[in-house]
Length: 197
Image (cartoon, rainbow, N blue to C red; front, side):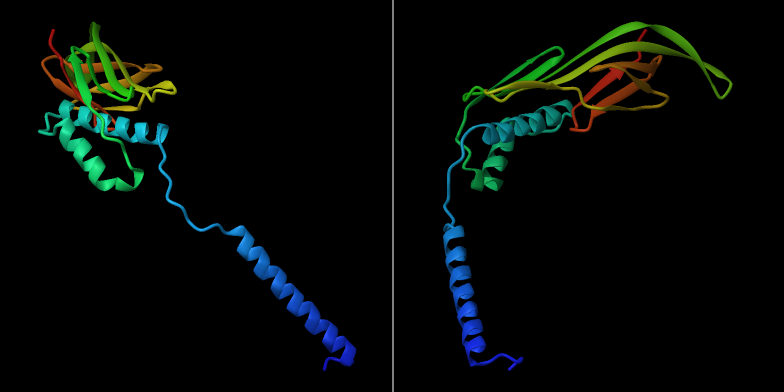
């Protein structure tokens, strides 16, 4: 057998048996049985803040969705996260809407629109007056252990509306006089700006 003598075959057989025992022992020592663990903290807060952002987006679009509806769906679909039941309060005033949770996490959407002047643009041979606005737009997240602000990319929808980034969270918006422009971010939060003189 492969030019091995009787002693070689017995030695090879011994090496194979030893290797199989070694591999079996190694496999048994590496893998612990799966254990279900409860994770508290930033992961749950992140999901709660995403729920708050969904609620704010729905409100900004005039959709009939309550914060209770959003949290109910979150609890229903993410039962593996074992999210703790939390209470919430909604804060809203001109330019700010936010959700505060009883565990200390919060999400706020803040915007500010300032009219900065007018300009005339020629479109297909017609002189059109535009209202120029400076728009500030920010999402603020508080995950209890840390806070951060997000300045999402924006888009403008409306006849001849123009939108250009100026600085972090600051945009220049042009709206035709007596026109309307819908400004929204990639999360669905929307603000309507009217071109009134």
